[in-house]
Each structure stands twice: as structure tokens, then as C-alpha cells.
Length: 462
Image (tube, rainbow, N blue to C red; front, side, top):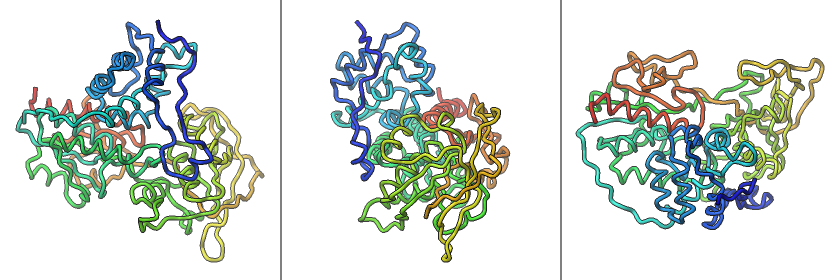
């Protein structure tokens, strides 16, 4: 009989007062007993619509049933048959809007904790499994992947399993893309990302770091080196700003720069020499997951006060509910229906505050959210000594600008077919944030899988 408990098995977590001072992972993970208890909540539906909510089509009821049976390694194999990064997805995917949103249990109670179960299985595999040799028959085809983020890693893994000679070109000195430079250690330990990269190396994937395609090498030069097909998964790492006075002051950061210093360059560790801001009062502009990451990182970097400044209300916050709740528990303040109009400086050119205006919500805009409207005469000053702009990112146009026949749209994203991931340049495929703009890890992975399938068909691989 299914476990008809209306609520998920609670996830063990660090105490908020403790975790706000360290970069250790917030969630501690299920024990085997917890995982099996939660797994019994699955109804094992004849028509599992939860799978429809997963961009990489994980066979969700099948792996959950293996957890019930205590066959954790078999559960992992089921997940890994379609998902190259289960330990990552179990931590950072927005399951509440994808697979769990489709779960039948969610109609009258909380859905099955699919993400937590995926994380448990992946972690169990990492801790208990032995490295196994996988026999791959080379197919004689050579492919290049641009970018080692979730889209690139997924595409590389699928192509390598099919027998291709795969080389990944990464602009940074570490592989993982947004998984290493954007997502903080307390949400996604970098050892997990490293493990996933090493798994691809075991499949024969080669990684070339510190190579900026479009500058160090071009797409044309990759073809000249004998690559038959190329996947571009270069992400969207170009930060956006508000265009207000004071954005060039000392103490104003893009969330990308701030998080990259902390995550990729290890500024939170005393044994690294990375210059890192140690501010007293930090204002983070924005309401998405990146804003939550920046705010929670600022707390851990020693700030006495950290504020989210967002022009809409709590109901319109685009960040995951879990991340918002964690931020509140840790002490982040939310200044909602507020919008900066000017950043103020002291006599030395450093940030000392912001001029803001109060907002009210009007009619819905194109996104479906009510449009924020300034309230005339409501200006006020907010004190802070650092401002982090977490307003979203755009794709860098460098690859499109240096590649003949590769079209970009008005947002500088690469134009690619939704079904095949094919671009306007023959033999070049693209997916993830480089095509869609900033989105989720799992959507980028889905694009990588789609592109790998199209590239194999293009090269005539059955």
C-alpha cells in the first residue's frame, strides 16, 4: 500500500544561524530510511505524467520503485540512462515547476519529493559504487563542444557514449560553466561537479581549458581541425545593469562577477588570494535565484546586513520558494516594491547608499506579472556600502560575430531550431542559455541531449 502521508519527508538541514556563517551545503540529504519512506508515497501511476514535466525524460516511477525495493544502484542506472548529471539536478532543478508540478499527489497534498530522491540516489552512488569500465565502440566521428556548462556536458556525454571522439573547449580554467562559477558551494558542492566532469573523462571526453572560441580559436578553425559537427553551449554570462547614475562607483558589482570571485576563484577561503569585498551593508537588486545566491553569499562573506531590493511583491518573486525561505531564515531582509533610481557615493568614490522610489503593482505585463509602477513623491534614501546587480544575463555575441553564416537574434542569442538545435550554419548546433537566454540547468541539459541526437543523425550515425 502506498504511504498516504500528505507531506513530504522533511529534508534535514543545517541550523540557519550556523549555516549563514559557512559555505557548507545547507541541505544534509535523506538517509536510506527517509528515502524509502518518501518513495512509498509514489502511487506508481499507469500514466506517469511526472515524466512529461522532466526536460530529460527521467523514468521517475521506475527509479522510485527501485528505492522502495532498496535497489539504490539500479535506481541510479535508471536515472543515468537519460540524465548525465543526477547529483546536480537533484540539488538545483526547480522540480516544483517541472516533474513535481505534474505529480498526481500534488493535487490534494504535497507532491512526491522527486528531486530529493534523485539527490539521494546520486549521492548513494557516489559513496558506494566502484568505478566501472564502460565499453564504447568508436564510430570514427570527431565533434567539438563549446562550453562545459550543463548543456555542453550533457551533449558531450551522449556523443561519447555513441562512440564519438569528443573535445570540450572551456573559456575558464575550471570546467562546469555556471555550475562552478554561478551556483554557490552551499547549494552545489564543487566536488560533485568535478566528479561529473571526471566521469566524462572516463568516457574519453577531452577538455581544453582557457580557450575562448571566437578569440583564441574560431568555429571555422575547429572545422579546419577536422571536427565534423560542433555544439555551442556557451551560456549567457553577460551581465545586465539598470543604466542608472552611480553604477560605475567602487562597490557596485554584477552578480556574475561577485559570485565568480567567490565560487570559481574561492574568495571565501583564506588560503586563496582572490580579492573579495567584505562589506558591512549589501543591497542586492533583483528577485531571482541569482539574487538569492548573491545575498546569501554576502551574509557568509561577513556582511552585517543584506537586503534584497525588488520592484514587485513577494508573490511575483521569480526565485524558487525554497531559496527564498532559506534566505529569510538566514536573515536576509526583503525590501519589496522598491526600485533604485541612483547609487550614491562618498567623497572617495565608494558606494554609501541608494536613492530609491516606492512602487505599486499595475496591470499584468507580457510576463503575466503585474507591472510595477512608481509612486510619485515616494523617493527615499537607503544606506548601503555595496550594491550587487542581479538583473539577469545575456548571451555574449562573440561566437556569432566571428562566425560567418551564424545568425543571432536581437538579444544576441544564437538562432537555433527548437526541434533539432540546428543553427543557420551547417554542422553547427546550439542550445541552452546561448540560445534561450538565462534559464534553468535542466532545460540546458535537455537542449544538450536534443543537439547530440541531431548531430549523430547529421553525421550518419545510427
